[in-house]
Image (cartoon, rainbow, N blue to C red; front, side, top):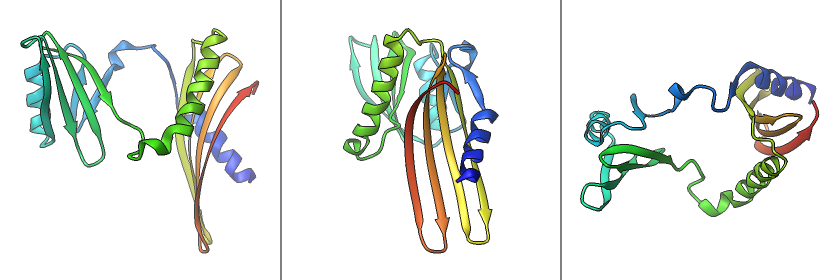
Amino acid sequence: MMRICSICCFVLLTSSVAIGQNPSRDYMMVGSFKLILGMPEDTVIAGIAKENIKIEKVSQYGGSEMSIWTVNTPSRSIALNFAAGRLSAVIEDIGPSDQSAGVAFAQAIWGALRTFESEGRTLCTIQAGNASEAGAKGSVSNMSASISCGAKTIDINILSVDTEDKKSKIATLNVTLGK
């Protein structure tokens, strides 16, 4: 157990980003193509098409004022919204394919973030990372993320244990006051 805790602590200390600190990082990748808000629609469509990724127009409103496209890869589903011919939003579905399976987790995250907001905790730091360790009888890996807002932190951990006897995964979601 101590080894697992040390992995979690190491992971949290190795990767951190402050929310909203650098607008030049406001992009999303589709393959090797970088989507940046404000890009012309024809540039976006051509760039994604070069990636050999399926893209199709779903709807158009008000002539050419607003259009919505979907991008589908084997592992991702993304909606692209355009207003006045420019990229105005990129929305990626990151939930489970069985959307009802993610409700409890989403409600827990929502509740924790809502509490932070009601307490005025809106200047936050994000940390994320992963670590793994292999031994003679199996391996342990941990993916973790935290959102720290003042003295309170939301911690998310996914622990995978693979031994000769069994494979198991557990997920934890905690709110901590203090360190």
